[in-house]
Amino acid sequence: MATPTKYSIWSLLRNAGSYHQNWQRVWRQPTPKDEYEVIVIGGGGHGLATAYYLATVHGITNVAVLEKGWLGGGNTGRNTTVVRSNYLYDESSGIYELSMKLWEGLSQELNYNVMFSQRGVIGLSHDRHGNDEQSRRGGAIHLNGIDSEILNVAQVRALVPIINTSPNIRYPLFGGMLQRRGGNARHDAVAWGYARGADARGVDILQETEVIGLMREGSRVVGVETSRGAIRAKRVGIVVAGHSGVLANMAGFRLPLESYPLQALVSEPIKPVLHTVIMSGKVHVYLSQSDKGELVIGASRDAHNSYSQRGSFHLIEEQLAALIELFPIFGRLRMMRQWGGIVDVCPDASPIIGKTPIEGLFINCGWGTGGFKATPGSGWVFAHTLATGEPHSINAPFSLKRFSSGYLIDEHGAAGVAH
Amino acid sequence: MFQIDCPFCGPRWQVEFVCGGEAHIERPINPDMLSDDEWADYVFMRTNSKGMHYERWCHIHGCRQWFNAARDTVSDKIHATYRMGEKPPELSS
Ligand SMILES: Cc1cc2nc3c(=O)[nH]c(=O)nc-3n(C[C@H](O)[C@H](O)[C@H](O)COP(=O)(O)OP(=O)(O)OC[C@H]3O[C@@H](n4cnc5c(N)ncnc54)[C@H](O)[C@@H]3O)c2cc1C
Ligand SMILES: [Zn+2]
Image (cartoon, rainbow over all chains, first blue to last red; front, side, top):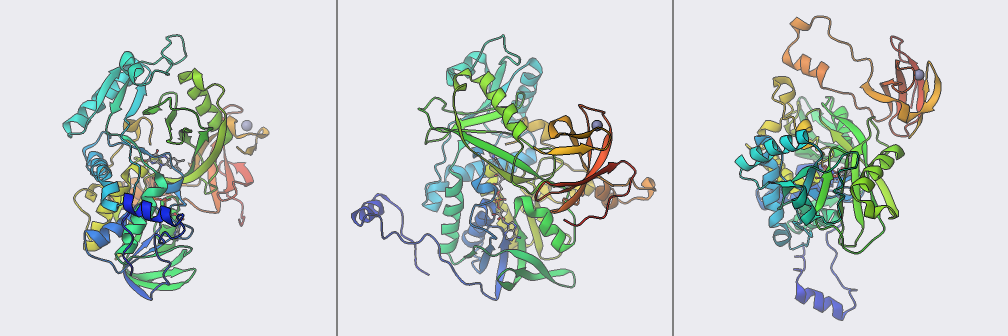
């Protein structure tokens, strides 16, 4: 296995000399082996991060990541990249703040620029009640050592001069909650950076390899059937987001989640006008401005189950109406692209990371509309779970068993906008 | 957005309806005999089918009646709508 070029100003200059024709491939295209120690199903950010930390933290490199399409072609490459760690419950603080800490060093760790930009995330409130709720949440978050600031209208306007503060609109602005360490990252780079790091340590990344069945001996999983033949493994981890139910079905159990379309859209590029991420759960829209100048705009998921990867038009209409009321300046902006993903939503809006009813088979799913921000932490704890066969203390509360014990981690009401 | 054929009013745009999720989930007959796992199965576990899916809708901005639909979750094509209490039609996606 060739050691990858270390990316630096020198490698950039060297390759500029040859007109960028000689850059080394970022990962190999290996042929599948007959057997691996660990198979990770799903080559999104979470699956690739899992493989990376299996190799780096646990020294397990006899690993394959099986992806039915291309790396990051699922929700990882379709999301609006909001990163924050200001969730209400202690359990959530644990996993989202672990992720935030990993984000803060990720580009260095991977030697790959994931363009993590801590530009701040503001959740708006539009009435007294919303503001009280934010203050309560902000307090709880503070107690967990995570930054959060409650803002009044003037403070919001100081950060976002283009926002509409008129008292004469349907839902006038009342205040907001800010996490300064929150922000955005480049979605594709996260998948590619983890893939490169995992590949360099010997992990086989197998694209266009769809899992179509699970092989079992008694109560144990012993491998998977794929579109490229059977591959055996001692342990298997399912990390397929919207397709979790399909994989669980193959294994013969059901999950407490359903798959829905969630869409987003981007505008034509404009000069920099928006320097933070803005979200409003009340009028339901959230947005940021990309480095290319496009506004990246998202809102709610559809209410019906679907694998169509296509959001409904009326939701676009609603989110743009909300956008224009908050930012009249965008009234004439044209929208360029719209797309959808399939999100796996749990009844308590928290993920499931741990064991399944089948021995040797583990699952990491239920991230729904908001799992991009958790990519590093999720991979880190899931690698621990796959390496040791037991959950880490950070993901132990997120077991499938919580739906029997009643220990739900109900972030639905808490999150306001769930991204 | 798709059209839904309300069994009471005929075809209408999706925006007139709310989706009530998976249909034909029966409340256990002996609730006090159920284990925690069996309760969890009834309350939380879902089929989440990729393909033919049976679900409830309510024509909230119309006749306000609940009814069932059989929809393919890959194409979003609705193959049948039928009234509450009726058995789901035999369909293949
Ligand atoms: C429009 C939109 C906006 C979002 N915005 C945000 C946001 O702002 N912030 C945030 O934190 N989160 C956001 N999310 C959620 C976030 O994208 C996801 O929670 C996260 O990316 C999930 O990552 P993953 O690696 O688990 O899944 P994915 O990236 O979906 O990867 C799963 C992979 O599994 C593969 N797969 C499926 N079935 C099989 C099979 N049988 N065999 C092999 N491979 C298979 C798929 O092809 C896919 O590549 C958003 C999602 C969407 C759709
Ligand atoms: Zn009707």
